[in-house]
Image (cartoon, rainbow, N blue to C red; front, side, top):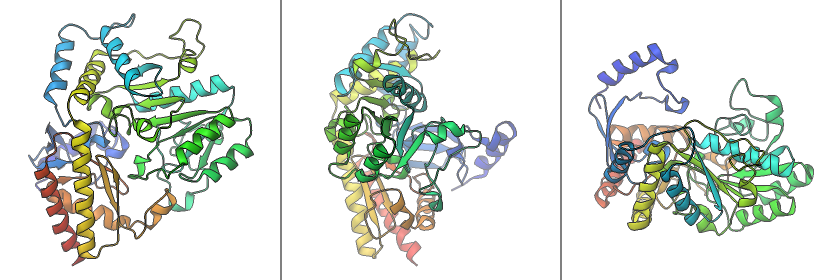
Amino acid sequence: MKLEQNDRLFDEAKKYTPGGVHTSIRNVNPHLVFTKAEGAYVYDADDNRYLDYQAAFGPFILGHNHPYVNEKVKTALDRTDLYGFGTTDLEIELARKVCRHVPSADKVLFCNSGSEATYHAIRLARAVTSKKKIIKFQGCYHGWHDYVAVNMLSAWDKIGQKDPGSAGMLEEAIEHTLICTFNDLEDVAQQFQKYKGEIAALIIEPIPHNIGCILPEKGFLEGLRILCNENDSLLIFDEVITGFRHHIGGYQAIAGVTPDLTTLGKAMANGYPIAAIAGKDKYMSRFNTNPGGDVWFAGTYNGHAVGTAAAIATIEVMETLPVHDHIFRLGEKMRSGIRDIHERLGISSFVAGIGSVFTSYFMDFEAKNYTDLQHNDADFYVQYRLKLLEKGIFKVPMNLKRNHISFVHTDQDIEYTLAAIESVLIEMRK
């Protein structure tokens, strides 16, 4: 790896931007300045080429700069953009597709980021139920706002305590957010009992991908549905990551559990900015986009032609080509290949994943929740990723982060990656 131009440009970036990056999680060593992306590859300022599995934390399900998606965006921008009033034909077409595919989506509204979508979902739940408290799960991420920016990637000694993710958060918001343990129905039931009649909603990543890939145990999501029904609380699936990546209808279509509200984003538009909140009509009609609705929903850039055209094109590709068959097959090839390598080398690990998502936890048992992950060898995990980076394999060099396979990855890419993984692990064992 050459890094001279990367370092020079990063120093320039820091002159004008705090830390030189525009999202906190991007500030990771080495500091790369990217200049080009195409298909399965990204390139930096020194023209180093990387086989990309980070995929910007998940949006690129079809690959970078997908020609069909880009052409749809260009065609849309030749005739339309943003109006600030009325409705566009693109918004109507995209809404129809989302409602057709996502089980919980009687109606849908578009916004611009997953954080916006979860904010709207929680506000709506409080309006519907006239209750204040919400439940979220340790390790899950639902955005940057005060309602949910607590107990994310907590220090291990902070588990079981209130752990706000930022200075400047309202104490009142933090106190109304209850933290539960993923895959522990009894813990959730106890919170519902302790705060009986006070919980507006339970929000969950049905698969906590913020911490890699922890799968829900059999009956867990079904149990949450029952508890929410029994306590007149709304069940919110945050499918910003899982939506469209694991199934065109979201993970809820696989699990067979239908939430009251769903948030969507990332893979929905193959890297273009758009997000959505969808749900049952009786709840969505409370938004003031509907005459008489009393829950505020607004945003100057909501439904912009760029995002809507990209999302329509992305979903069209999923509708007409075997996107999920391909990425699921390659995902299983990657996971089974890594397991074989670990077994041959005698490395204690748990290779986690589903569909196109994979990661290796360096621990000797299968993790069920965030607390279990304290047994992952974090130093080994990060060093492993740094050494893969040197071999042109881009997995973001941070602890507990997932990797993604896209529709443009090939069998040869997986085989090259597995060879690089084996080479790196042999070197690290020495």
